[in-house]
Image (cartoon, rainbow, N blue to C red; front, side, top):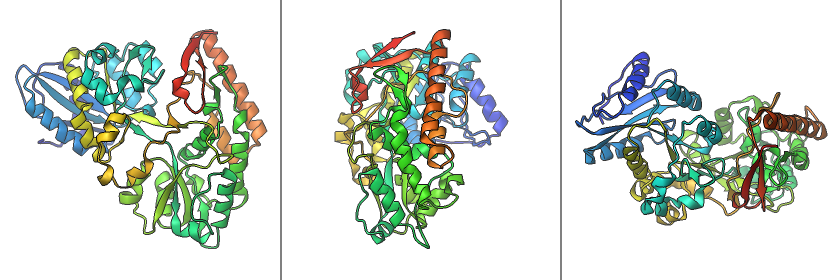
Length: 472
């Protein structure tokens, strides 16, 4: 793929003008990285009469592979050409603005962590229902196991399907310095949270600390997962009764607060950016760190560790797994309703979700396969430490909670303040229950959200229940 460097202003103009051309065939080649986080990487192959499918993504980590495979597709197809644009900043809002302005792409990538609330984009008419395309394509069904990976409120509503995930970002794990943990008298990470807290205390001495946090989403790094696996209400939402109840988080945050009370936490780490804390772990400044599968690459390439480090399951309150650890589906593609050539767009989605494409993608270490079909095909011998983060039986996708608008700090911030010792658990829980249920009732009364109730709810298999919606 030949590329040219252009100015930031011209790059922005090209995104508008190229997309606005619709399906007229020829396009210009451009690649630009701007201060606003926009890159375009577009094939400059011109084929008269070919349908041009505009594809936007916010993923940069897989750019080399995507370039290679899109080049291959464009070279082998005379009727369809893919225009590839990377747009990393303000992703969700950018898609809405492009749609409203008539400059939207035909296809976008999507992952659960994008926080693109499905209800919002469906109600606005932005996302296109692809259920008929899926029903007519047995190969797509086989490779993706599309009907086994429908997640209510995240990828689908009832029988209507808006995207199908191919990969998954598994839940958080504990990364640990084996030298420091062994020196503290342990050979493995305890399964019980109280024992984990004691290990952090034992690993703290004059030169090292037991654990560290970060200023960037500190509660989400591993404490949230610890609570989920302990059976606490995910996001504080009681799916069985359709109300918010944070009381099950009390023992979790009170136990975690002992990490600070014991002096086991690297001082000031909660004010450090995540990369600073990662670098300090790699330097051996502390023994325990919690994060998800991206750390496989971080501690191999970005901040390589000079010591042997392990990956362990999260501890739980009792040492038993009583709830599912939330995992995050990714590697999906959405067709926008404004797409003028939907059949051609579907061919591109099929290509990105094909066996050959996905095999190379997963073996390149860009994600972890979600479908059992692809899991059985992928050779994991070359994916390095990513293999340590493989999907576990107790991981699942929770149904989307009501889209409430809550005034004040969100629940993770409030519970993190308990860990820091700024507020008691009882005060925090009373505050959260009051504000979140008030927001739910307000949303129900003004029609901006619905009460979500999961019939036959099983905290170990939350996606298996039947989701129902109520307006009161």
